[in-house]
Image 1 (cartoon, helix red, strand yellow):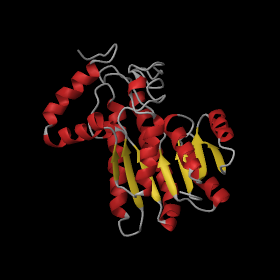
Image 2 (cartoon, rainbow, N blue to C red):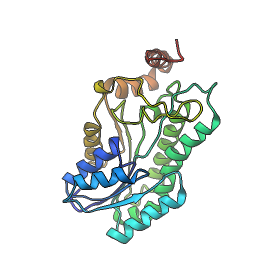
Image 3 (tube, rainbow, N blue to C red):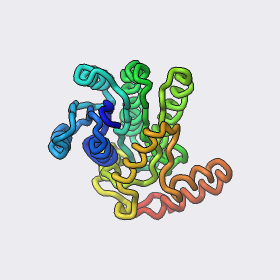
Image 4 (cartoon, rainbow, N blue to C red):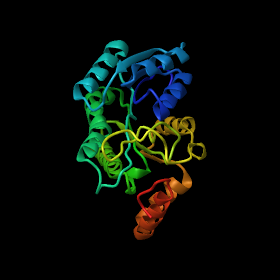
Length: 267
């Protein structure tokens, strides 16, 4: 990764922040995007030896995504890797949810990936680089109470799988990375049925994979040019296996698992 130019969205916290630190330690040059510029500034201060471009970016805004890629090219002259990491979650049953929440999930998670990929693609094709989407196990199995989240992650997987095939003979590497439950801010910032943030996590974050471990696996998968990465055995690999061969059983397991959360609407 030394001297590679890597764009990371959602770099201000969680997996995105951990990816930036991991890649900086390997000598990469970074273009970091997020809405919270002050957190990006703090991150840059922690990485004084790394060449970094910071760009305030709302990935649901197409023009912001275009500008991110344009500024990256102005600064570095190339793009070797784009990691579409920015995303938000939700926690509300579909029966009760305001549809604006579903729109917001799709705008940030799915269309944010579409916009950034669109404007980075010509540059990635020149470098035969890597296009990465950080989805979730929710992109393989529907999670109750997370309809918009699962829908957006399924959509990203379909979008990137298709781009891989379209560019099969052009040298483009496409990776779809699906972490299991990973310790981050995503659950605190998850939207409720009216679009407000829930403010606290319903899960024990200390028992989850750390963002740093998750980032380490993603970087290794980029280096090996893998097409997919499914993290954790029980919540990841086993879930995908059951979904293929025992889908009805997986439905029951998923329902029971999510019903154990505090204040779960499922009993």
